[in-house]
Image 1: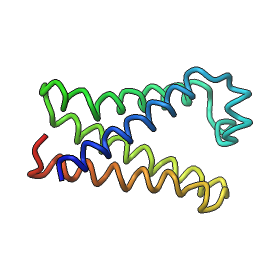
Image 2: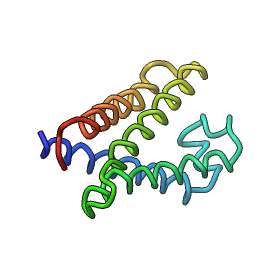
Image 3: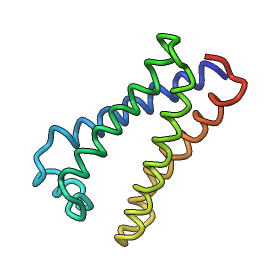
Image 4: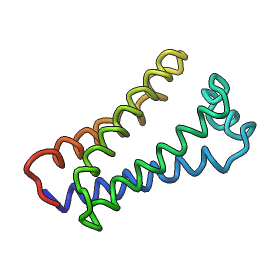
Length: 124
């Protein structure tokens, strides 16, 4: 079980680090072309989401690797799950359809699983 949680945490970290970096490094016009929901929010909000995703990615890995405050892994996963629930709600509210919300829902479910397992008896 511990190996599965490590694999899921690394995959989540890679996805969120990539997504966060894209939000921080891509021009707003290109972001709007690729992901139209960006137009609904101020640029500062999109940058803030990018920073939170990158911090969450680090939080999934670094505390476990260093052994310093490993509870932060579960907290980072829970925070990312909340972020993905709101991302899915944005897609649904915009009328993008379930297909656009599905990746956010899947990431939320995986994040909840990691958070729940790391809060519980599964050791690092």
